[in-house]
Image (cartoon, rainbow, N blue to C red; front, side, top):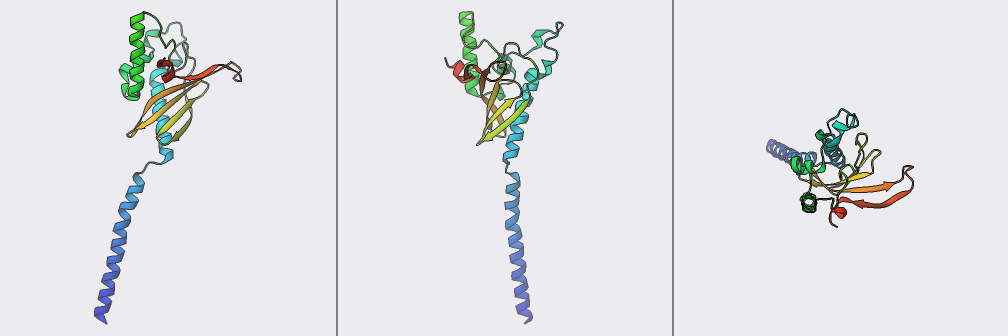
Length: 187
């Protein structure tokens, strides 16, 4: 009887220990899986950091008569200074447009800032809405007619396109059809 008790105790100990060991890797694995909320948060932070660097730090001073406009970023600064945030396709199309501008001595496709959808931006660009579906992110801004489209790249994001909507000042009537940067640069 004592032998039976020892065998049952050993089996019970083995089953409990095996179950615990099997559960550890499963729980560790699920804790490393990013959730949809993590992707929304990371896309929002990534997008906002770019706009804070690119424009928002100048937004309050840009209309001051004493402000040196040479301090402002222009879209080619993003290609030169922050190429890791733009997709290779966007970089290639922007560089192609810049080369065509140099060759012709004039405007080719871009006569506005494609990240701000403006020639004379006003106010800060604050991400107001983020939608993430299957490693794609659409980030919308308060009071501005631009939507940034991003794609997950490893643990970070890349801007892959910028979409524009053109409404009248009352916000009800479209003045021009919607467009996007890839389409504009591909003409």
